[in-house]
Length: 592
Picture: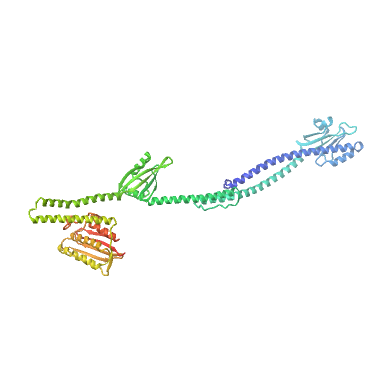
């Protein structure tokens, strides 16, 4: 059945059926032709033979009649039977006629067609069923009657008859021959049709194999062009199609890669929805957005198809109104602005695309701006209030003695210094954060540099009864850095350490060598920093609990400035602290 369903089988079967039908029609026509031809030939032969016999007998009348009969018997074939009727009394049969197969005069005269030979003197012919005995009952014979003209005789005739079985045997042999030829023709046609169909379908099979290879993505597959007919043209067209498919697929692949690269490199998240709200495409920022939301909802599977309801509401509004929709969503401490736009296929909406912009940093910057304004206002309000109050006291002569006036003037002076220091530090910090910090690096000797700074703070440490000392690891000689800026960092750290260390405590400055540079640590035995405040100590205007601070309060900008200086040196600064156990500030200065 597989063979018959193939092109080879169908073509072979079509040719075979067509040839068989033609041979069948031709066989029937040939059989009919030969049957009629044999019948006509037999009638003509019998008529000619009968006329020859009549002519011979007519040439041998009277005494030569027996000789005429002898000659006549030599003319006839073995299958022919002849009756010569001279008169009603003289009837002669050919020697090959058996007694049981003799045609009697009575049968002839009783037959209306055969009797015309005597009555109308014409040649007659008839196919009749003769029954000479029970064995041949129903046998058909062809009977030809020719009038015979003898002197002195009125009713003379020659009748020749032959069984149709002879003609049927000839027809049968002819039929067998024709059927044999038809059978051979069918066999040869089968072989030829199979060969032809194989030749025709061989390129088609190669095209089928090539088509499967192309379907698997092998667009370089080519079909060999074996002929220059329609099949060859088809192979050429197939090869051209493969090249065009390869070009188109390469173009599509490049466009897909470009789109994927663009989506992957976008800072904003992109989610493409189908018409029913199913997610089609997402990029990494969108995946992170969904992961944040899954975590918020308590689901950790990345295969979840759930979407935040706020996004779905915007999607539905965009599809229903065919207009852009904007919304905001916040969770896990992050903020997103969502823009949903409908996608069109011709004139119909086929979905929507959502662009997710992470506004967390902008919100934090906005909060930092507000906090900065609030902190600056707070820091300036106190000294301005004190300046205003003491100035009014002096103007209104509230201070009676000269000493009180000097004391008020000293407070005004100290607060003005504090305001100047605050403004200068704000300017420095602004320049640093704007990237305008210029470093003047020098190759400095570590020991002399550290000892000079320790010596600068020894007076302050003694006044507060605090032990201040330095430990420098052996082998550290010099390193390149900006001495003024690093001194500013150490001044801030040591000053903070002394102010937060109670009497009898200690402040140690240690220098050790690391693989990438030198590590400088400022460790005190003071009150420490609460754990919840540690992440914010390097932010602007951070201040420790004033109850734990001895002496004047700082501006809250020193550590922020220190961090910017260390970052400018491509190093890093960190802090470790425990309450009532002390604090350690560490920063690394890289060698390169």
